[in-house]
Amino acid sequence: MPILTIESTCDETAAAVIDDDGAVLGDCIATQDELHERFRGVVPEIAARAHLERILPVIDTAMTKAGVAPKNLTAIAVADRPGLAGSLLVGVVAAKTLAVAWQKPLVAVNHLHAHLYACQMAEATPVYPCIGLVVSGGHTSLYRCESPLDLEYLGGTIDDAAGEAFDKVAAMLSLGFPGGPAVSKLAATGNRKAYAFPRSMLNEPHYNFSFSGLKTAVRYAIVGPGQQDFSKLNIDQKTKADVCASFEAAVIDTLVGKSIRATQEFCCDRLVVGGGVAANAYLRDQLGNAAQSCGVDVAIAPPEMCTDNAVMGAIALEKIKEGQYADLDLDITAGLQRGF
Ligand code: KG4
Ligand code: ZN
Image (cartoon, rainbow, N blue to C red):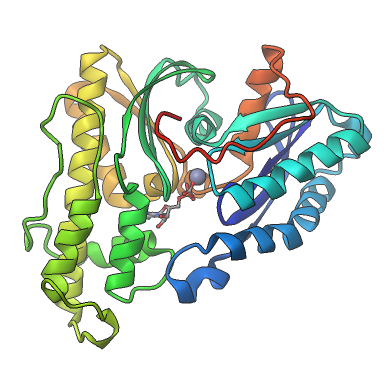
């Protein structure tokens, strides 16, 4: 019997109905890009209010597409961590309410673990054990994964996430929101060596990342120290493309270098990559090349499964197999601390 999964950790409201063999019976995603675009980033209060308006229609659409009645669900799963507090709260309250109304057990899903599980959903054979890299708008984390639910945190960003850096560079260059796809598109036409941007901590022995210095380096390359107003800049297309290409190369070199090193240190021949930035074409290329030369298999979900969705909430099926249900007093964990 199928489960209902709910995702509302950031600015996508999503629900899916997934059968116990992992088949997706119906799903629905409502994006909020148009609401946040003029602010060039996600505004938490606006995101929470938009989730509130959309959550029930989105769940209803997923259930209708699947042709599944509430009484035929086995459980209701919801991402309860990490994310924006107001956004998480809407999903968790909706899931708890439906669990009571429909008399169904509740399952709590870790959104970052689910991003990695998206790769399992796209593969015919098991991807675990593996080294897992999550690169999203809010997180950049490396894990050693024994199984979908047994993960050891190896390291992560000590300041900004990779996706946040993409979004802010896009804002500096007036490329719109979300910034990742726009930066990536322009980068493909630019010179990756035009600017010598820093590869922070790439050669240090730990698995932490830092992208805030890179953001500042890009800023100085564009406007010079001290200037604030990017809107008055008149940067030509070629310069924009070169900045994007050099910036993207710096981010991707760091992600590829550290994750390949983790596979070697832990003698693991599989690397799994999830999160919105995993949709990046240059990352996919570079990782593929580096992994091939080291004899490592790489599993990355299709781009639409990299960004936030509820299908990856199928990780709840693994929790159900282990009898890991949540109580009705389940609360959100926004998780500003590291180590998720
Ligand atoms: O996983 P996700 O949908 O949401 C979070 O959990 O944060 O990731 C969103 C992030 C945004 O920062 C967005 O700019 C970035 O993923 N992103 C990309 C690409 N597509 C989305 N970054 C680089 N290249 C892309 N093609
Ligand atoms: Zn995400």
